[in-house]
Image 1 (tube, rainbow, N blue to C red):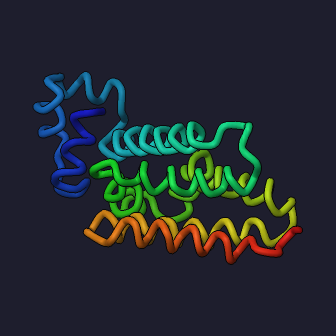
Image 2 (cartoon, rainbow, N blue to C red):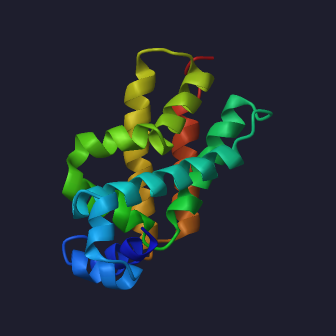
Length: 175
């Protein structure tokens, strides 16, 4: 998986062949297909690992001792930091959606950052009808910020903007 991740990041999913993955991983083609049905299944496994690492980073930044607002802020910053891992935005926000589509990527993300964001908003605002929509909209804003940062945007400006957005969205709601 590490060899395929490196190739997917360097060349992109579409431009990476399974013979290249096999050579980079120093395994046989049979070994690759023993573990993965096809290249798409291999990408899914890489994405699942990326999402798990993303969730781990958010969970580490949001210990249970934090109140809901602090946890939302710290989790938000942890997301942006974790998305700065080289290649992660390409995998999770470019190639993943291109290969699997929006609905499938959202399902994968629900166990990761999107789910964490929804949980944080619910803890702060209660389980009202606005929470799923707010989580979806904020998640999209976080993804755009991560993409902008990955292409050279001012990370500090995007971090500050995301924190201001969270503050505005949550100010006075559910209090």
